Length: 307
Image 1 (tube, rainbow, N blue to C red):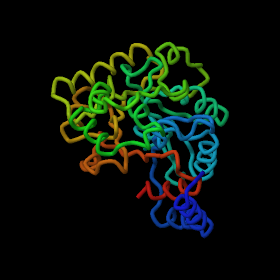
Image 2: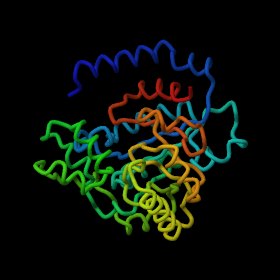
Image 3: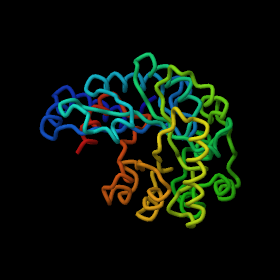
């Protein structure tokens, strides 16, 4: 059940949209292409498990798509990033992306997108594939009372965001396996994707570490290894773009991404300000979409995201 604060927030968002705040902002600030960052979509009954902010319910996802397509034309990410000279300046443009390759993305989100003829991009970290529960879901289970911000920060910084670090730093926490739709897909499942899905595949590094905390050699391996792996297996779907794990990057990381041969690097707006500081094609902002964001909240955020 939503708490009082959430209910009040949704009411205020509804009032703002009802009074046309989103339309006024759009006229005042104009529109530039916007990239949405999702993680997973699950049946309504699974919402709230794991790191709940990452797993949006199908019902809410449908509301988001209704809201998005009422104001924006959804285009392939490649077109948004590299084909802007061909975009209609009077049309609001958006791209949809997913991180982490959760099974729910393939089995729940993609059929919904296919039914609406909407393209999307999936960012894959090959080493975390294989029907696996990811550490941030395992230690964020409801029985633990939610995520531990201090521990999570230590895992990301001191432990480089790696699973083995999470297990060492939280040794007494039960490692709770998630339901199938909240675990990662297998390589075979990705290879068996139907040709009817308008889905491109990009790199999310090799093993999903926090890149700014890696040594130079480890950083190079994390960038180069998935690029070759994905290009070999998905020659028709591969898009030479990197999505930064946890949204973490730095000037040094972005330089390494460029030197590795990627055409662009995608950050997350609302994570760390340094992700956006240099304004290059290797700090392209995406709008992070948490699972609790309402339809009206998305409408308002779509306009803010363009500013």
